[in-house]
Image 1 (cartoon, rainbow, N blue to C red):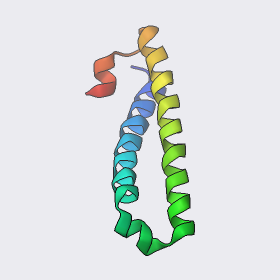
Image 2 (image 1 turned 45 degrees about the vertical axis):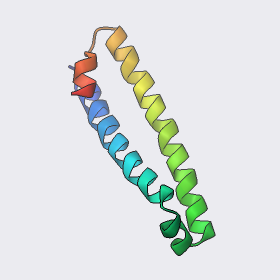
Image 3 (image 1 turned 60 degrees about the vertical axis):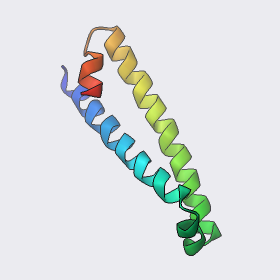
Image 4 (image 1 turned 180 degrees about the horizontal axis):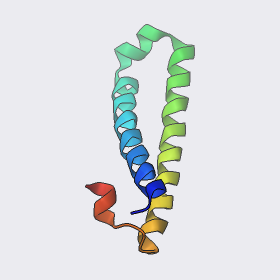
Length: 77
C-alpha cells in the first residue's frame, strides 16, 4: 500500500473514533445544556462537518480499493 493511502486509512480510522466520541457528547442533553446554546450549536455543526469529511475520506478510499491500490480489509482492519 502506498504511503499516502496508509496515512489516509489512519486518518479515517481516527476520525471515525472522534466522530463517535463527539456524537456521545451531543446526544447528552445535560452536557449540552451545561455548555450553553452557542457552544452546543458549534459542537453540533462540528459533528456534521466531521461526518461530511468522513464521507469524503471513505469515498476516496473506495476509489483506491476499486483501483486495486488497497483492500477493504486494509481499511476496516
